[in-house]
Length: 490
Image (cartoon, rainbow, N blue to C red; front, top):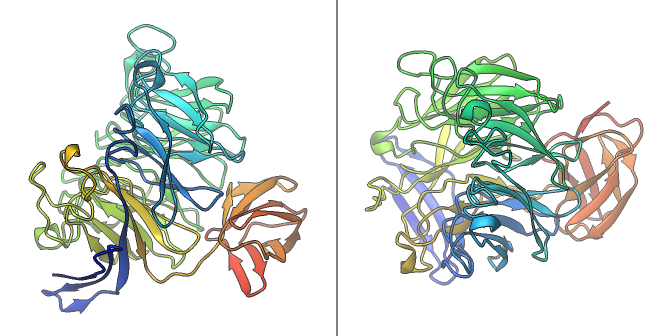
């Protein structure tokens, strides 16, 4: 059952979810739809989630819409004001941006398009905060039917500590199968690091992450020893190790089809989701060690009518309260039926490190439908995300154009470093809120030299003698700490 107390103007809803069958009251939180997409000019169908920029605003992409209906890059303020930075032009200009953006240390945004480009196989692009646009690379550039350099990058990029970008393509590679891992410099110099051959994975659709050991980790949606997908490790030089093949048993109790990026916690373990498998064949939340051992923390559709959600395909984020937050594109407590797809509209959930799941919000089409991009926690403490469909923007989008939403769990502000690892003597960015009065910055207790660039951004130099740990920003009315430890690299 769902009881909503909504403001008809702001769309802010204080939500109290009650599991009648269990008799357990879940915590109250505030859900707000902050933007309904309309197709043109702001875009439609935001498949990926958001990234917080150094200016305190959020950046994202829409798969379609914009002024030419090939997708758009947008900026949105925390209170919902949208600016379109770029509308894709199709063909050589790229189309269908499906992945997350990444803001580089220099402030520019980098991303991928699934289609378009000079060879109609997708692109890597750069866009400045004032809308200047550059196509850095068009896939299938090496000719031939195999697209040995890869094709159709479904996922976004990650910037490594070497300032280069790393990503995956869902197809192509030597022999035409089964996707690749690549490296590209900020100027567009490209190298293929690994080609999947199905035995070590197939169809990598999730972004990579760079772990605390400097290596990259990722997933493939299919392939591997049991054809249920894989988790893998790869170095910046292309040294590749498959660390787990999903679907080890006939019933795939350990999960199947991991389509989301992994998350590393402070203890070095990884957490993620699978879209299928698990006890009820509707997906899982899992824990993965660096040695490849998987523990299923939660199997979805454990409750009647899948009120706890099903088929999670988005990455998790660990909140400052230590819990994990994510989305499911279907199921959920609202009991919402989507006439076009025939399933429920999805949910936002919280899961504790020991596997206790709480459904926080069930979408009902009017406030969104199919949240495929997951959520991020902003430095103001709130969570923000997108829905692929739904909202009230424009009936011309068929299933409506999608939304941007926020959820407040009552968590306080914090700071975030960009990047989250570095050597002593290097300059790193610190994102936060109301930082203009900063009186000091320290890395695990070691005082650092810093410059306040704006109320949302500080540049600090990693001090000599610093050790890995929390970054602290001292303000006149208190201290803000980083959400994850900063790793000192040798």
